[in-house]
Length: 342
Image (cartoon, rainbow, N blue to C red; front, side, top):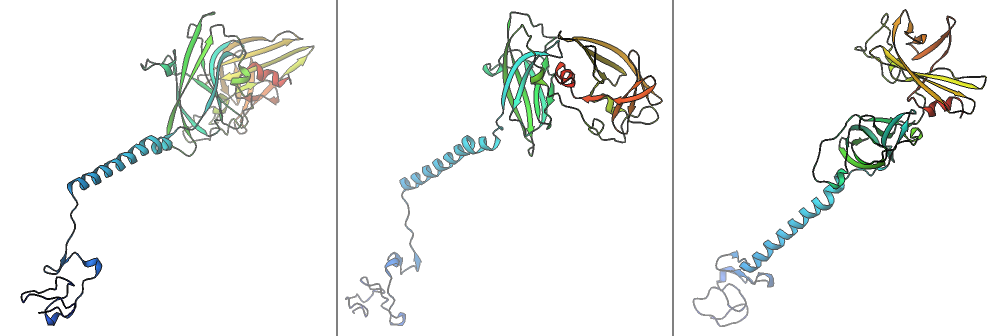
């Protein structure tokens, strides 16, 4: 018997032509196997699958592991650090004197307009960036100032309690935690300050911005739980500022005073006096005050009139109200000289 498709001689028992793959059975017609079907098993009617060798499977497994490992390394080494990278900040640091006699060490923040909050600052009395051991901080009692546009300017610590000795060398580290506008993440920064124990440079221009504290009463909105005084008036605004009297310049002598009122009904006043070309004479007094019948009564200096509606403190002379005190954010010699255009 010959194949009807290609003419190849077939055995009587053949069902498929071994040459062309055509079915021998007349009822099946001529079914040719295409080139892509050369592995087709006509006896089982299912495609045969090539089996990979164990070595090839091993190579595939190794390749998958390497790709996964490379992707993991790339994520943790490049992508994740980029996502969590702290914004760049630069600092200038130093030590100096503010308010004529207060010795401080400070860091001046530069390029920091995006900082929204300071979450805490700790001071260490060594270069923490070069030590693996973590000793306790010597202080967390920091202060800070802001620029006129409310960006943070300087962070400083008062050195009066640290036994700074003239002639000695000191190294301290600021550990600062900030968050930025538009983000809930808190980033930690370190900055090391080295200085001589003979702290005498005037740092007022660096630490303070000398700006007016305008709208002192509006800085804190009135709330239902605000402590009321003297007939239900809200006088909390008087605690938010240093209040400067009107500058006096008579007979070649300049005079001005700055008041600070505290919630415990105590106050301090700094007197600045300059005669001719001599240096400023600075003196301080402390006293107590009370608010009665709309008057701010001081135990030493006399009486002022607090205006709760406008957030002002008015001076009184000879029983009459004159001009208002000037609210400043900080008390410094530089602020005093600003009043006299110096």
